[in-house]
Image 1 (tube, rainbow, N blue to C red):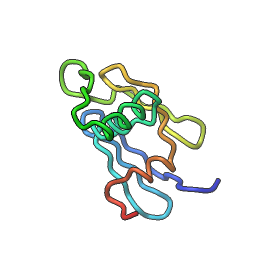
Image 2: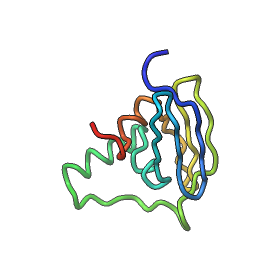
Image 3: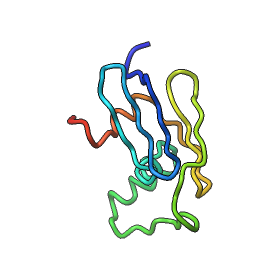
Image 4: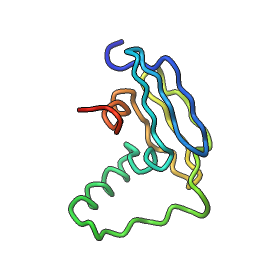
Length: 106
């Protein structure tokens, strides 16, 4: 397998996802950031629209604090996270997660 490989995955449902990578780096993603950066088609469209129009209306995300309800591995290349607002269609590949890691320099 080429590309980034996780060796440890830790999901704190009320906080975020921590991944330790085979190259020794560690990435952290808050639940809110993961939800906002979901690779699903509807979220990509919304991010594109917001980039073009900063005044675009963001649909409400449900009541209460956003949490991750659960997560499941997708093959050996990704993870799917189910959020408390009902969103569960995004499949986060390891490569995508490395690309959106705010703590890593591009």
